[in-house]
Length: 119
Image (tube, rainbow, N blue to C red; front, side):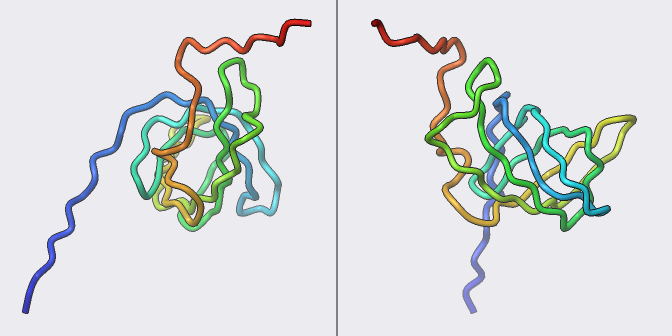
């Protein structure tokens, strides 16, 4: 029998502004802006004001600096795999349910400043 070892992927530390939306356990819609703290090929982790629990689903969409929605990026859906509540914040680790790897999403450079087209 051949034993296949799976190497756990190291997360890539980031600080990506994102919009997080979903429905909490009480059935209330939530939507807030936060920062994705790290990503892997299979998931990400972020903080939220909404108390999420294992099994909850959240849609994550990257934002441009200045908190503008990136028009060419799609929401990606994640299942909460762990949650740690502390005070008014909740830190969650998620697993991607579908879509492109978040680590491969196109984000603007850190000092990006959108310029209006010349008239």
